Image (cartoon, rainbow, N blue to C red; front, top):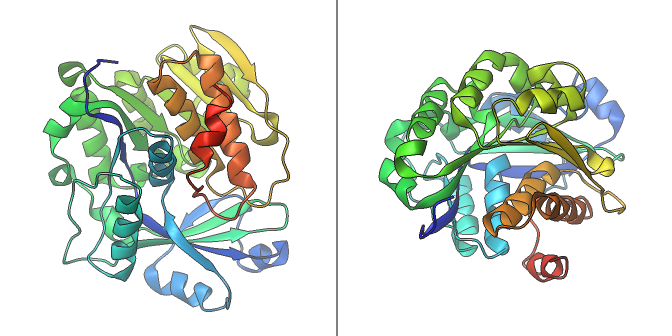
Length: 328
């Protein structure tokens, strides 16, 4: 990482507003949904389902946006690029991120689809299943990113969910191509095993270009590389500097230079797993930016994930920074 850069972490992903509800397993069966999955739906279907619920919580969300939010709370200088429309949900998303001292360099659009939203259904086992309307996020393109911003950035964090969008894939490839010229590093979240299966070849092509840090859970890593989690991480290590796998209540494993390292989980009572992987990445990258050993980075990640599952929703309050400092 080159020093003297103004932005520690720049995230590029879906700008989504989360609607969080509690459901039982029978509801998922009735809706023909796989527990723990994410499915794309249209605006009308999403709102028809939301209308079935009287009680829900609304918050700014999006996988990489969650990571950026916590990274900012951990006193890193952060920016986020995601497409929003100038509507009520887009305005709420903007205000939430800006209130956390996060730079939003691209403006909301006045035309096109409504801002993105996601119904997060939480079952009693704390698992979350998502229905997502991508809306305005689908129009993210090269024109939304001022490439000169990359010159001031230490790490660019890319969201795997964006692989469903052809223009976003072009953008990601362009960013990776600028890596050597501008001297930044690139981290990538695999985001979802179904997304990986849909775009396996495109993921591998981007990773082989040059990804410094790869994040995924056991299903995502194995979907991409095949074999067991350990075999997949070792395979990833042939082209990726650091590959990291989250394992829920079993902690995490990372691979560096063809060597595997385990990091133990923190034992907590899980209420909601929404954003646990996102905030693991925030903790890990926080340690990496501050030049801690990778074992400490993984421990930071596990701690942030544990704090996340103790509450409803992905966003943690700012006292997380004081708690994490006690781990240093």
